Length: 311
Image 1 (cartoon, rainbow, N blue to C red):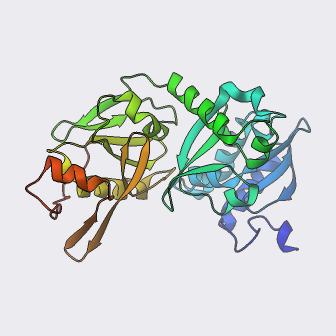
Image 2 (cartoon, rainbow, N blue to C red):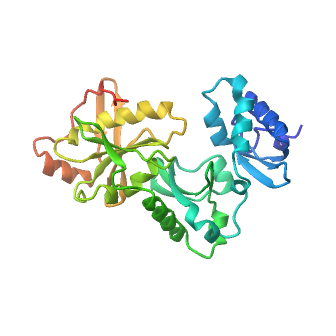
Image 3 (cartoon, helix red, strand yellow):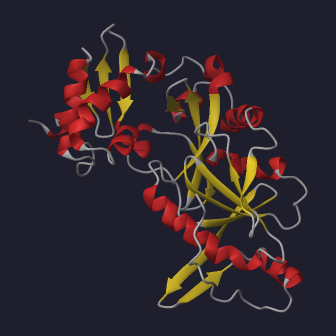
């Protein structure tokens, strides 16, 4: 068998276990589809109506990997069968799906995304990027560079349109308290775009332009925000520990890092563990806030991160 026809192979080494690929083959056959081309990160199929679909494997595998492997074929039949045919086809022009464009956060593009030219905008180098997706009732598909290039509009035009659609779906009350002692807030729209609402934090929680927010986005459905105040200033290590713990268990993980967001600008709040000590390196612009809010301290001391976020 040629390497490029072997499911799970593309550029580099196989990304998915053989049991997943065998379950996918079985599901495709049970649906009456025909696999035409395996691309490592996706498979191009003809469905039962002879419509061509390109199915991304990453999201499928993430959704299955915590389930018993003997259930994978049945789950894949349900998942693939629920995806509308239009989700597997690129629109002729993005203007056709302008009302369906949404913004999604994720790790920087590599692997499958790089291969198919998924469009992205870096928010924090090496740590976090924003993407555009076309939202369907039961699925979504990523906007790629080719779609934007053929649209007649700059990428920022479509990004702002996706952001406007997200804004329309975000009530001012979507951030709710989840930890009274600290004042920690969580986005709770529960529509698969809660992490994306970190991009709207200045608008949804107005009046904090001077000092900004601590933000963690451990997974697609989780965005936690803490106002930067004299009282919360020392809680950066605690928030980072929450992000690390949650990111390990998320079905759609994003980042275990802590970010400081002010005026729409994102900064990485670097915290490193070394033995029993923590080394905190705040963004350069954050030093002025520390000196103003807590002139009694030069650097945040080590924090006890034993408290966990309540369910």
